[in-house]
Image 1 (tube, rainbow, N blue to C red):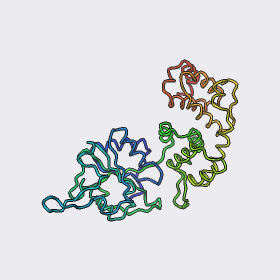
Image 2: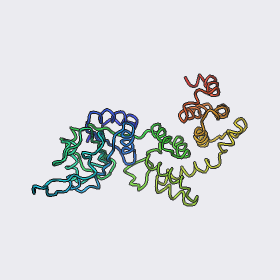
Image 3: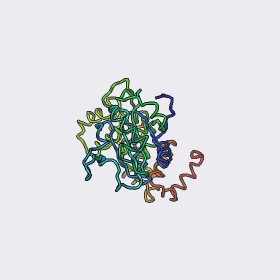
Image 4: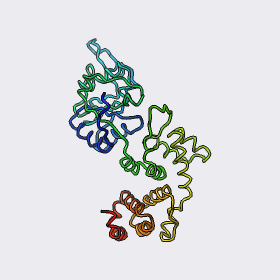
Length: 337
């Protein structure tokens, strides 16, 4: 495959998939490991009300898709399709997601390709309301992969995936990702996805691995094993930076103390601490806290005051109707333009 495809952010991939799935056009998502391909397909399915069958092609045996034969009442062999393929009782609309398709053995790929091209495998027919989406890693990612036959490639739409911090942060709010993880990635956006196949690392920073870090923090690990846990998840360099950031985060004034005395609470000087403070405060945005948030935002460096108020609006859009926000917006109109 050519390496000249235009990369798309997750939000643009979502928009493209909505169009392609509606017309049942087969599509292949290309991207490095951990960038969020399967997550985007699940997001589209949930948003559009599609059923989703997530099939890891690399784990299939060649006979799995065809199913098993049985004898009919008249003595003929009839193929019974596998239960993971939608049958007569399946929802009217759905997506079959063939993940890691180009990493599957050639015989498995051949069966999947028949499903993609003909919407059938042997006697099985894919229901009319179902679409097929496939995904896999690129050859340059040094992952296990098999070159796609040109005849098949020509019958699919190919979209290449790239990570986007803005898109990930929007998703992170809905997914309850820890605020310290979000604040750190605002401070070090390059580490959202830091994958270099030449480094041959077992662990590396990716949208998926930062989600794992957030879950670890939710579990409350002992402080003396945190670094090893993070190192095994996002790699040595990213883990070291994140641990340094955490030490700052944990020394910040509490959100409650800032909201209780916004004109007197300490204002951090380090950029990392400012990002962390804005992230934590924005999570408490509401009509009852906007007076305090606006007062504290006035004391922050201009760009961080804007960041705090923007994140507060993203967290709770109702705050734009409060008098405190209106006063702050009027006072900073030249920055917002």
